[in-house]
Length: 523
Figure (cartoon, rainbow, N blue to C red):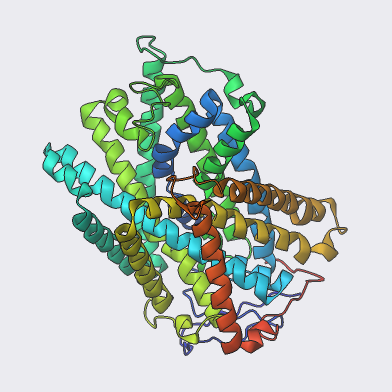
């Protein structure tokens, strides 16, 4: 199968549904081609993951589950994500389409499985967007309180009306930047991601230096046994830590959703995803080791196992590690991390909705491209409105409902990542005997990654049934996290059934074919 670049060129008329661009049914979307290079794509992927925010909110809970084996669990969570990243890379080479998981899964397993895979990505992203907006709001007031020395300002985060209104303002700003296309997005992200990584580097150096001074109570000497996953005290503790670790890597696939806007769309996005993954695992391991050396894993004071600081470790470590002046930079980095991720996380949801609409799996209106910015304007606005409404409603209903919705996120992530990984092995099934490379990167590695994430999906689903999972609330004796997670998937089924009546051609497999390539010609 020779891949044809279906993107409109300068001067072409942009319509709501682009013309078919290749023999297998893939279509151009009218996006701004060649807007992002390798580095820009990798930066967008790193930004979406929000490494500083993930670290401050996950270091404590992970230590609570696995103790000093935290670095080992981070490595264990990296493995299935790396295997799935190989699947994304190979699929992107064959079909560089911004619909990514949706498009590829339709071509491998048909329209119904593909539609649900796309839904899993969309709903997971909306949940993450609402959470990021809430985190950005909290750190905004926390930072203002630190800078002004006013507890009154810091306490505004606890005012529900002020919190929700500020949160909606952050969502509106992020939507506006994303609406203006990849050029605006890329410029903002270079600054915010650079700030995050620079502050993390300073934190790591200062934490290790102070830990080695020998003057700190509770500090630990580095041990290679921290990297041994088999030293975790129990399998249940390991799986709990693994679930947290997998969440920390979510978002790298944004590199692939900008493939139609990337220079060298067949190869660059896959390389950018792998580069982003390497930067992330390096940052996570160095920060985990440095934090553990400085603080230890105790349950009091600055110990990483202290339940009172588990949800925001950097707030507790900022001044002890970096001092009063530099410590403020750590608050700035967390705010920058959440704000940057809030903005880039609009990219995958908007482009997935754009692709689903282009292929007639969603209403055609979402496929409209802004004539000036060449971005999926209507899909971006729809994502922003959905995020704002979702967060406001969840906040008004109950704090527990909002917390449980976030806990249900892991289910959605494992759902669509695992389906995409399996889709890779099936899509390339006729090529697996061509070479050892094809067997490993198109078959074995993706299948293993999908299998691992499917196992985490099943274990998480079982754990969610227990009301003790999440906030501890329940519905008729069933954990509310389970009800929310399964309910959101069933909502997707209901919408799919409605769309099947409105768009029968897509669901008959007439729009996007289930072709398996006999030959892929790379750029």
